[in-house]
Image (cartoon, rainbow, N blue to C red; front, side, top):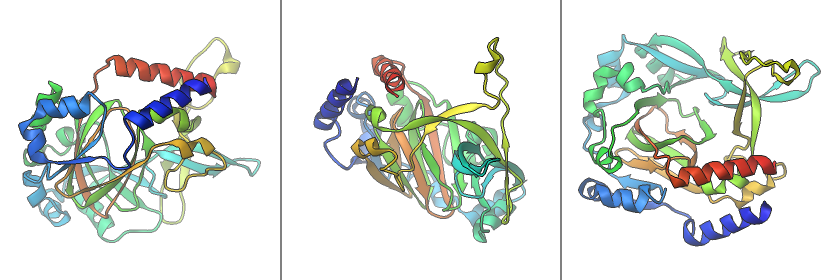
Length: 330
């Protein structure tokens, strides 16, 4: 198995990931040549930074904290709150015998007025980190009054993918809010409206070198500047073999933090090809399906992303095979 992984690494480094930077092109390329974009980047599962890609959106000229305060300040919004900034990520917690256990923690979600959320951004509180990141197409479902400023789709992307987006999401938050490394089964058109986002990208072909484990799932509760609780999520899985059941829900997740990688614990991670990309105001990142990504942002950054369903073609089949091989090799 190891030899097969080495062959994969060798071939991808030689043919695909020989550069330390992703391509950058002007928006005119994708607008005028959507089929070339599909041929050169989507079909090859290659990320692309599109300079000025969303600079013509009305939102880029209008949206800001003060604008939201004036227009939707009284609106109820769902806000993710964490003590550490990781709304979906790993955290160590003490267990009964004094040892530490790593679990996967979801954020506490609170409904508050938009103006209160903006106040938390203006005057940040220690250990109380706020992020609007509800991803169930929240722009079309919860911020519909903002939708005309960005549109329900990116026309050139819809032409290239030959479909409309499955979801359109609105993001805004604290610079302490961090998205831990993960992957999505979507072609992601990520638009920065204000501020900037810093992405760390790792290609899916490096899966053998990206450490994973399965963790108990919990939810942050009663987060304050002084304390928080974690409520474990009970498993609803039923089995005839009770001894094989877990008491709590379990979730597979990436075990390493690329900002502070523990190479002693995870030496294989040194093998991955890492791309660092800053997406500035008015730019678009095309993030291909199944690429691992870790995200940070400037304070108060505003972004919108469009998720287009990926094609379950031969590349997807090969990836699922690689996934199975990696599990067998653990």
